[in-house]
Image 1: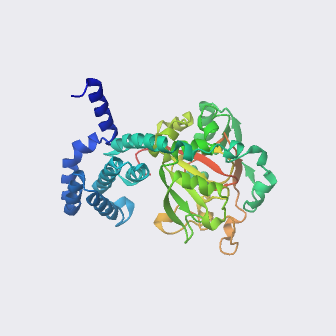
Image 2: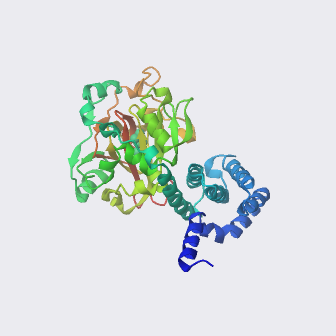
Image 3: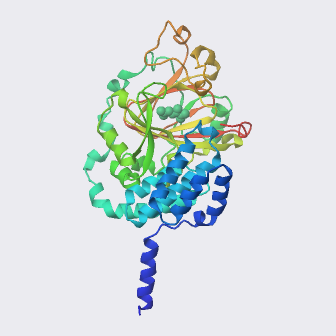
Length: 420
Ligand SMILES: O=C(O)CCC(=O)C(=O)O
């Protein structure tokens, strides 16, 4: 007979060996009913076998749900299929966890977070916390190579501004500079910029962000997020034919940045991704600026933009107020007023109508004559600075060094009920 202490240790060990999914356990019948109502009988059969421990069925169910997520445009996916996908990812992760395979577990869980619905999010997050601990303790020595100074992405002494500015679009920094304000008060922001719809660079406003000291450290990022899977964009930019999206681990992404392969055809950019919903440890390193509560509106999204020097986000506009906060490195930003849309040749297709046909890096003056003498504002956004971009202002962004920025989009109360 075992002693009470030994019995408690056995229970603790058994709990360690399984990924608990209390929400999935409670919601499974209801979710399966809804999936059946959408004709997903084969998925329901496979998911039921998966819940009973059948790995092959778990994989098949995951593939079935994946197909449903890709049979039309994203906005037309029936929402229950996103929950079905998250459920399938949890089944796969639970079975792999029992086999002690931490990396595939984390990949399955991340896929559930990235592509799945909201119902099972808490189960996914709790499972990620538990599996990350296992993965870290199995690999700490292998992963963490302390390489002193070279663990920094960007070293200030390496900045050669003349060199960095070499590859900017013509006329850069010769038109109007975006105004700079230090420690701008909320009142000042409201009166001078928000209400007038004018851009501004705000300095000295990120001193309390842990990210400013942590995110330039490759070892910190590897340790915190190295095993996680993230979506990245590969290619010159999203308007080019050869552009594609990939899912890779954060470690692999960091290696690509370090490998210095900055040929624009292969540039890898973690762009416009809600990384902080996915990786909660990184969310703790940033603070939503008080400016984002101006206008009584609500946060729309919080996105990461992380990549090597040379990434380009082509000229486009967004419907929301935006604070673009520069955490690591430098970016060049060019802005055209929202009133100049006509002269900026927007694409005709609905999906791209907020993007300009003009490639600012190689302006075709014959095809796009109106853009040539158009007034713009521009700036170099430095570490620790935030740029306010008013709604519908056109912006083009090029990173001058390895760069990690965060954008905060919010709507004022008048626009907060309209779709983003
Ligand atoms: O930083 C970038 O590359 C683009 C940022 C952007 O377009 C935005 O914040 O809306």
